Length: 184
Image (tube, rainbow, N blue to C red):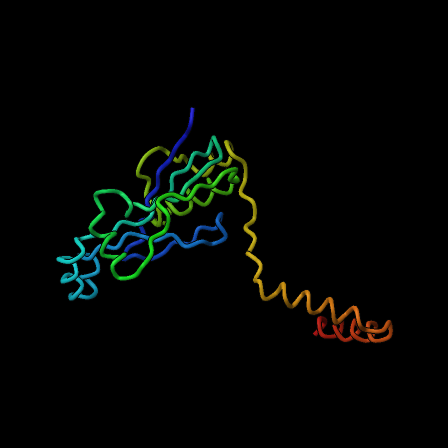
């Protein structure tokens, strides 16, 4: 039996939520014009053009199967008018559904629970359980690794080429300088 959980990105005013299991990928939250009007009264004028709210993205997760998806609700028929307005302005929407397979269950479970607990995600369907029950069922989270900057790859390659052309004496001098700099 699958344990499918649907979670809405509930960060207010369209704020984005960084999702660690996807390398810190940003998920769009719901934008509500009446909520925005509390901070900026003119925002309510946009509600006549856009409706009261633009929905945030949704995560659909099956922890038992190890699958997940980011769902863009603006592709649903009931949001067609909003989607068309966005497209007329030259903006491109994400695909209707982006699938992820063989997810790390413990890591996803941990971060989903944390984001629900801090109010960034709201459970729309299913039951997530407690952090303890999730850890027991799916194991501990893995430490998130920061995606490597492509510029650092170029620097690594450039350094390797430069290192290769140094004489043995120059390499020893360079190693001594690097060791001294690291000690400071």
